[in-house]
Image (tube, rainbow, N blue to C red; front, side, top):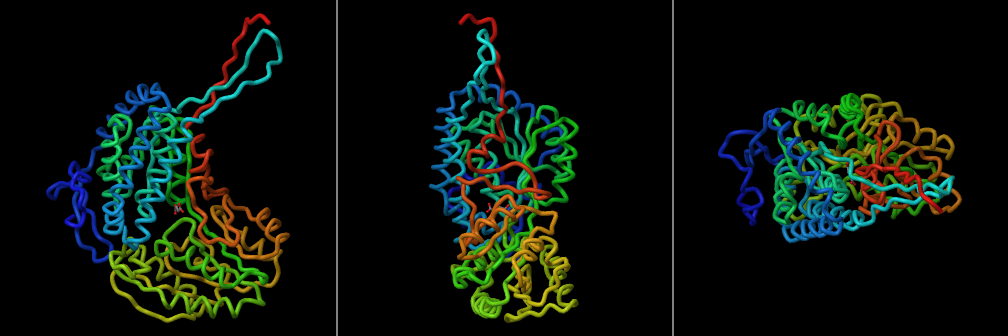
Length: 476
Ligand code: SIN
């Protein structure tokens, strides 16, 4: 923890050896130990937040906005420390980590503003003695479980709209990356956000916390970012108390290069989309489809770009790809590669066998469409390429999946751009762009990639109820 200058960030959570151990994925060294809560403590947290929320929702939106803006400012003032923490516990290169801090902060600024615009509406009344209107009200206590791949931004993307709407917010971060989560929460307290309105918890085990968040009747909204497998289970648990849910689950993003594409721009987009966080994002391009006429040029240029990538310690300035989050994650990715190779896939870039939790960037051609590498989420720096002939078959292949989060395609033909964007069954479509996430646009998926949207005006709605008020007995 020597590398972190602002000692207040973690002062309240570091223990002298008891509790959850946090490791650096670069060399598996122990970074810190933090305390864990038993299930009844988490239940008490929810009850505290239920009381806190009643006060918080009465606060004028402009005052909540002021506190959120202060939080945003403190995050930016501490961006170097926060970025370093993200790299230390999550492994991503420092410049990407800094990008994440700014991306995460942008949600707070955006929702601070949006919270002041939680407008209701008036409704033309069917009779003269009644006035009909709607008002927007905070749902209540919101709970969330967030992942390790964006240990800061996935928290602020949920916490900021919740707090702006007048909800209180409790969150369990990933066991792999809790330090960033507690540090960013400490900054919220320093900004003046009360402790009975925002709380970060780490349970003795994840299952116990998940049970409280999904079964407790005082939790009225549950938001999850993680795998479809786990999301499905949590959503079922939420059904017992009919909670509102937002589920940001797995993806299997197609990246399609049509024969009219600008190939250099497609290469740039492919590199940015595939290798962000070593391929460990839900929106990373997962499977590449390249049309006949441009196939050879695309593969050739891609291999040159991929072989320039430097794998190493995220703290080193020239690193492009850090370690994967765990040995299990590495093994899973290596197994996917081996399985595809066993069925005829060929690696066309430099082969490297790396130790520790590193996986070398891998470009595979002649991959069969039904292989697990193509059908599931890779979550690693692997790029399977499939050649295609016509648009119609291509769209069928792209849509032939249970997932529907992000998709990407490259084309210069305006008719095709509209046609294909319309027909892709995905919550997000990037056209001639490989990275499309921003706080001002709605992020989320269709099909088994989840429900609900984060960011944008839609992100605030997820934490609001619409109440209809009918005022009768009026004279006109
Ligand atoms: C994710 O992988 O879940 C989030 C990625 C993003 O916000 O761009």
